[in-house]
Image (tube, rainbow, N blue to C red):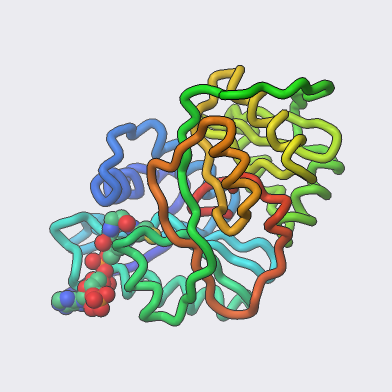
Length: 271
Ligand code: COA
């Protein structure tokens, strides 16, 4: 099999979109274009594609936040699956990350991806699940939740403390593409597309204030790291329910995060 794997350049979003739309059955090409552009803003050389006779058949991206890296958007066009293409892309990404001195690699694995990552030594951490919020059962009285325009130092510090690495590039990339930020004493939430997250909050009250404000602005989806039992309890108690569950996995050194402050993650590819 004469396969070539290379880094995708800016402007090559169509290769990414072709693979990801078929692998993940996503119809919205414009959304994939936006995601590709955000990916490259976060990690300029982070998205790779595999080509057979010049046609893109597989893809995968990585994002480096200091010693910590994330892998996402691994996908192979269905008719080319089970030929070792994802294995080759993953090998290439892992070599790249080893050369760059990354200590921990994390990802959120689908059922299809799980065996592939296990083969490379990734271990399970906890489930991460998309929840839908059709309505809020009981509203709390909240004050001082405000919309801010950028990631200020306070937000950056809250995020760093909870997430355990500086991912300001990822937050800023989303803001540059129209995401909004809610901020209150002790927490913040990013709002993007139809999704709420990250939600970083010092307790349930702060988290609920952020989520219910996001809900009132029309946001209905949130990805919960289910290792945070309080987050699961909170989202269930306000009327959210899980629609799709996958598995957080990691390879390498244990990464220290403050999971009890993480009520929602950013996305499945970047933490
Ligand atoms: N002939 C037959 N089987 C082969 C093979 C070959 N030449 N080379 C590899 N395989 C087997 C592998 O052993 C592996 O099986 P195993 O896990 O039981 O050992 C299986 O094929 C898959 O490996 P590989 O071929 O490298 O993966 P892939 O190219 O089929 O892609 C996914 C795997 C997950 C990327 C692909 O299924 C996909 O795009 N799924 C939808 C999107 C998704 O869920 N992505 C992952 C998100 S975390």
